[in-house]
Amino acid sequence: MTAGNDTIRIDNQEIPFTAGQTIMDAALAAGVYIPHLCHHPGLPPSGNCRLCMVEIGNRSVAACIAAATAGQQIRNDTPELNAARKAITQMLFVEGNHICPSCEKTGNCKLQAMAYHLGMLDDHFPQFYPHRELDASHPDILLDRSRCILCDLCVRASRDVDKKNVFAIAGRGTQAHLIVNTPTGKLVDSPMAKTDLAANICPVGAILIKEKGYEVPIGQRIYDRQTIRDIGLYEQAEEKNKE
Amino acid sequence: MTTEHTTKRKLKLATTSLAGCFGCHMSFLDMDERLAGLLKHIEFDRSPFTDIKHCGPCDIGLIEGGVCNAENVYVLREFRAQCRILVAVGACAINGGVPAMRNYFDLQDCLEEVYLRGTNVTHPHIPDDPELPLLLDKVYPVGEIVPIDYFLSGCPPSAEAFLQLLQPLLVGEKPQIAKSRLHYD
Image 1 (cartoon, one colour):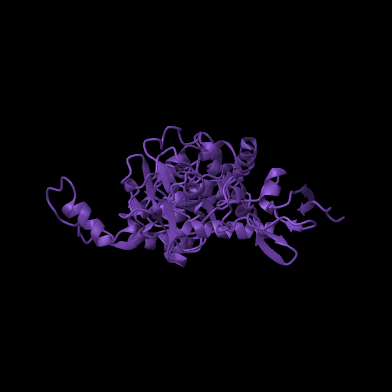
Image 2 (image 1 turned 135 degrees about the vertical axis):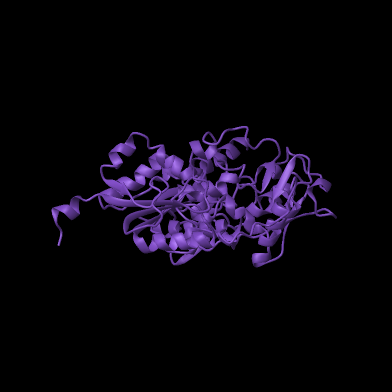
């Protein structure tokens, strides 16, 4: 059975879409979860974390930036794709310093929750243990680049929602890193406030609001109670309610 | 030849803490009265619970902590050589954990900061007793030194997680850690 004029099929489930929607938007709106870290409903997609890779025929595409097109037959929740997603997650872990027991974000971290979702038992690859600059200059916000996964959600949130353009990604390849758009390069000299979306959208523990870290005890945090799948679908529904 | 004796013998279990805090061992003890049931099927070889100094031939070895010094490397290799099944237990064994946070800095800088320049240092001297094992340049996950069969995540893994690992191993089955049990903190 083939999909209709205004539907796509993901893992044999027929899903409606509207013109201009990405595969990710159509899937989440229909309650079909495609794993993602750098996608966030309401922000323009970036396509950089590659966790949302799905297969259409012989091609692999990132669902967050690929347009839904009538009749697409898409594979998403397959053992092969989830194994590849786990390998990507392991690479994200070893490239940074993700020492969960010492991180304020533990239990609220999407990278950690993704690793749980994909059944990641070890990091597999050798650790980089990079030394990256920490910026504690801002009175309310901590920037610890050790944990940054370069999803650029803060870049997009600051530019497109907060209209402050505080962040950017500089450098290429393994030299890529998050910079602050101020003459000193320090967060304290930026107009960033702790109520900004950019201060609250970090999926990992790279951008933290100070003096909040342990308000909720470990064991009672978001991903101690819910899966990243549940939260991913919830965020989409919440964004739709705003419209 | 499989005899009744060999099929019913107790499995030998060895445990050690390398660059760890013994928290995983404490969590192992949190199995409480369930340990009594476990001890019908296993006996300890080298372990802080027995104080046996060297690991003999074992069925299961549990490694807590990462590898931070030359002695850790020696002990870990001995465990790998002697244990049929080697398990990395806890965050430090799996990815270096909190001790690996020194890896972002030069080892000499760390030693000088702690023993020479640090706050309230009264007799500046970097310890150099020949009995002290030499530190490695970095703290390594155990899996970067020897092959590991199973990984038990958590800081520490819960008593239930230990049971979920050990019970299948006791009957010769492959343990499956449920996603709902998976925790790195």
